Length: 54
Image 1 (cartoon, one colour):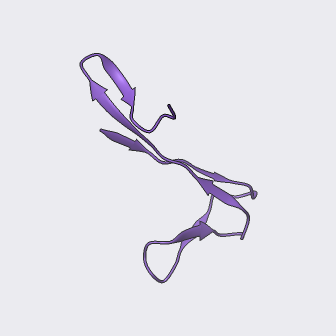
Image 2 (cartoon, rainbow, N blue to C red):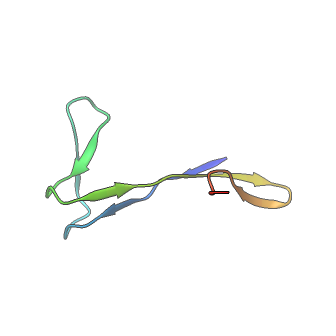
């Protein structure tokens, strides 16, 4: 399986910062951001998107 997790940042930079908890990420310039995830299974019949809406 493969997890694809893109970030979309509305600001002028792709820079980000890691919070003190070591887990939380936020945009360096304070702009809005969105995070999405899809999990893909690689099968003998080709890729299958497991997180696709039904």
